[in-house]
Amino acid sequence: MRSPHISVCGFLWVWLPLFYSRSVKIDKVIADTKSLTKTIVARIQEHQFPPLSLKINGLDFIPGELPVQSLEAMDEALELFHQVLSNLPLEAPVVQISHDVENLQSLLQLLGSHLGCPPHRPARSDALQNLTERLAVSPYTAAVVTLDRLQKCLQSITKHLDHVHNC
Image 1 (cartoon, rainbow, N blue to C red):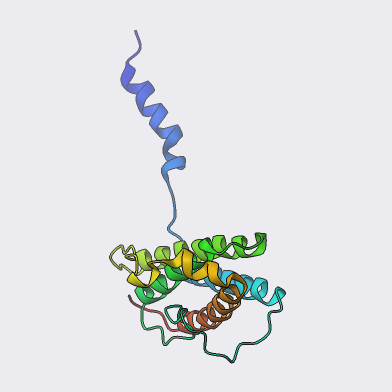
Image 2: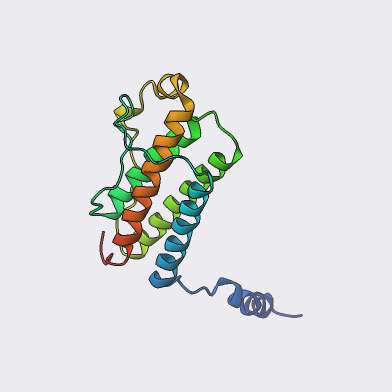
């Protein structure tokens, strides 16, 4: 009679390589994050919206180029952009940009976990109340403002990623 101990050990020995995993290096996550930000900026530039020099009332809650001090601040800004882009009633490229922003948030959260930052889920901002009504008034203008400010914010994030060493 065979011992079941040997078959369990043999089974575990075969499965051991599947459980072995290497952590993703921080440099790789930063490179992927920069690559995705460049992709999003390229998608925004494909729209060829006219440059904005006007101040538009009602959309002041959407950040522009910010002095991003932390991964948490970047995540909060991207969450706001994701919410706004998700509520815009526009075509597929904007939906793709919204999905890319969500993926960028995931990469920043992964980077934060590698740096030992506590998990953070941004709270819903009070500025997002009545968002649908605000965006429905002039959806084209809201899209232009949002994408212009998102591009500026992504450029700030890319600059900050070169110097990120802690939360």
